[in-house]
Length: 255
Image (cartoon, rainbow, N blue to C red):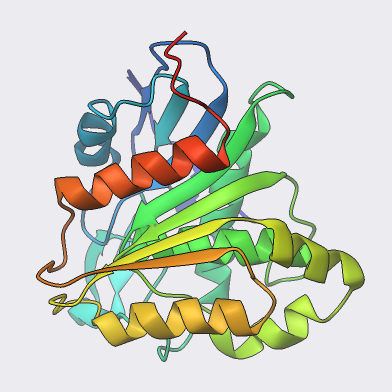
């Protein structure tokens, strides 16, 4: 199931971003959790929705939006679907906070209409993983990068083959309040990365996990895969399924 694009602006952002088509995978069993899953640079929501539909997770509703098409610096300004602008795919790149706030706000808006008893999560691949991890830090801090309040209660986040944006400012954000430190310590995060990744290098994934742990995110699991490049494999998705089932307390029932 899919529905059309929308314009979403993070509070305080100067320019609107036109998002593409959003694809929804309905739960085959009792609806217990909703996860927004974000594709990588140049991709769209349809490709991931087709994969997620095959996973043995009948209690999860998946929402797979499509990023806006915008000029991307890493492509020399050539337009591509991207959650934010990026000059290089690493945690060392300059941070497009306005773009990340807009996409994190779009994710939060998609989750905000879910029923109150449903657990909420965000995940993604590559740049989508970066946006998911950024959303998790906004949840812990209680604010977007621009200072506006983060509105939803995230239960967890998953990042495959990605990196952590705004790592340099994470310490100050998490130490800003006892509540932020408590949220950081409690939210489960799964990061997976292939050692053969030649797009987002393995060291960036490893450093991102280390930065999260060093700044109070104590419930971080980092999984590495020796021969994995910049893509996913069944072994990795099996790990994701196992981790989601445990951390969302879904059990093994499909009802």
